[in-house]
Length: 484
Image 1 (cartoon, rainbow, N blue to C red):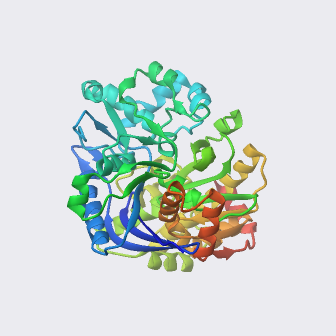
Image 2: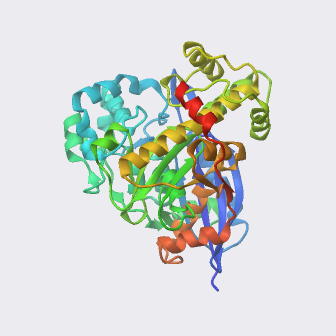
């Protein structure tokens, strides 16, 4: 049978990877070719992304792939959502893009909600959260209108790298749908919101559906990397969209959790759900493969533990996640419980101190040891999953008996078992590389190497092992939940 090779560029908030994939006989295999760090850079009191540094790392990964001498079919980039790059004519970047955690939206989030209220949700079906693209563009309009009006377009991060690869300015729909400026029912930019908020219409780019072939790798990139005239494909450029596309699910009664820096938990629907109940629960509608809708809630994930780990490293104590998980397993259960979505945890300068402060104000003992901090973070996440699954069932009217956890967080068996116990649902963990797998197989779907989304998911089931976790005693979790 024919063998196909693909390149997946997967950009996360902590790291990026260039992956080489091979599809053969109904199975796909992944190989990590090049990994590099990522993270926001503090610049003049703001948080920015070093996208030029990422671009150099991506090209280095492509050079390594090229030296393999394999016939590559295509390449696709996925990335975190929300953030964007402003452009003008042949100038690919007007300034270093802001990070979604930058504080500039503090001045635009609440006033926008006060002015437009539920109208925004009625149009976009997107949850209200200060990191959304809408509030960053309004911050541009407030703080630097000359720059914004001088731009003739913006592209979100993954789509911007596609532009650098092939020269086409196009926004993929799964990424556009998380901006809170996209109408998921009409599948177009909301002209009403753009006009009412005063944003310049000229900056909003062409939008293409998932699994669109954008063009060929540009000649100068071919020369610079050694790759040939391969296709550049926009699969689901938003990393959550790619991960959900690759969930190895069958039948009905399942939900998904893309577990990483963020926890994105939801169900796959045939159409957007723009209900008052969804608005009240602050759930969002994002476009998926085949015009499906990812009805989900974006919540804090492993961010709290990640930031604690960074703080400890700065203090001279470097722990990997396996060590921290072992410490958490040995720590006292339910000593301290926090709400991971509390605003205190959004962008603190000192995450351990933010956890201590939350515990002080809620009358709980403060964590002292690293194990106590880690246990607090993981147990609190499991309780968050419990609340969100209950809300999902209430809002959608669906019964959920299985939770598929994909992404880096699915490696944490302690958290997986906690999730099973806290939610009372069966947990299926894996594949770990859900985003990259989705990235690759959506390329295959776009090129006709995989014939349907159902076949795509079958390839995932046949290619990667998963781990099962059955629920245990829920009583301690019910008691812990009461404390929140």
